[in-house]
Length: 462
Image 1 (cartoon, rainbow, N blue to C red):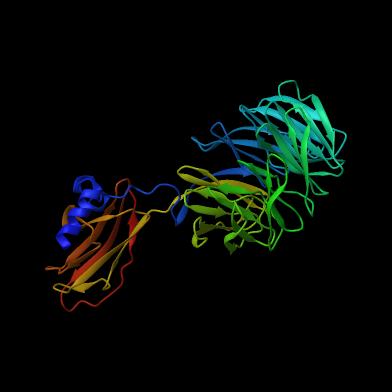
Image 2 (cartoon, rainbow, N blue to C red):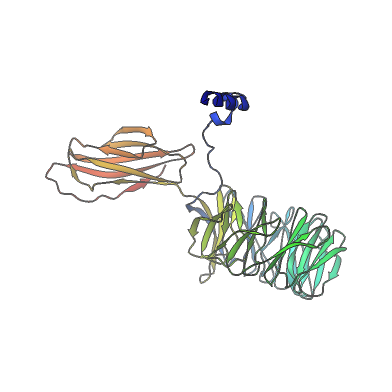
């Protein structure tokens, strides 16, 4: 009977050679971000960074409170150009198709190319509160007086059309198919077409400061009353709404069927975007100023706090962290294989961009301290961090001679019975498919009457 069941399974699979039950190949080398992480490189910057880090054409762009826009080339990790504005910069830069935009506290909007050359500058008589944001052929800015200005991106920033809202524009314009959305202090969320015609307007219970997000047939809106709304994009009618413990902050992020919502209370929510049910939530150490970043199966949060924390996208379980020691001034930016973090020393007024990568290290320990008498049993154990399916090769140095004492294998332990007195170095070489490291440990073998001492491990990276 059992034999017949096996034959049935084989026939359903199309034969053992084609059945996944009988195939098992090696798993692919993991990609993305793996914890623990460590700083691999950094770029020093003068001034205090604004809360924003953007990427464009191989550049990382930041703005400082003192009125400087800086571009760091990713490949060389150096500042390739700087641009100074006439007044301090209250907002981070924004990236267009082939341009970078920024506004200063003197109510001027600047458009630069990716080489840092000023293309045009537009000055306004009203306080700018939102934008600049490029959508299609126009650049949009909003004011405290409730004006929305559409600027021609190609013609020196001249005003193409304008719209008067009932209150201050507080949420930057956000692209939507065939147009864009914005939010106001009174809670209005209009959807415009490309010509500036309002197709519909939704009224939230509180003011809207987070840019709305269009995703397929839905538009997500958050307000200062703590609600998140999912609107039907064609008519602007609510499909669902959810009250959260905290006001939405930083921005929404959609990943598959999940909607990630950071809040003012420090709670990160993961909602089912289809019906608004809470899939998971986590209290985080961060005061959110930005949307989190998703790197494959991890959600990474960092804003206005000295800690970077990662959670499982599926379950919300905490899976890693990094202590920066300084204020993290922007949402981290994934630039494979690095996670880039913007840090500022508020007292010194200095900043830096730090490139984080998976930490790779090896250490070697002995179960007995050096020296030990000849004939004693000493067990050496290697610990590898950041490797995938590591393999270990142990070796012994005596003078210039190096002897492999345990060939490469999955076993991270070697037992030694020294036969003669002398000064030795025990080492281990750890390797996986992509990387190799070594660690060594000096060890003295004496006569049986020698007294025990201590030995400290050291690491040698290759």
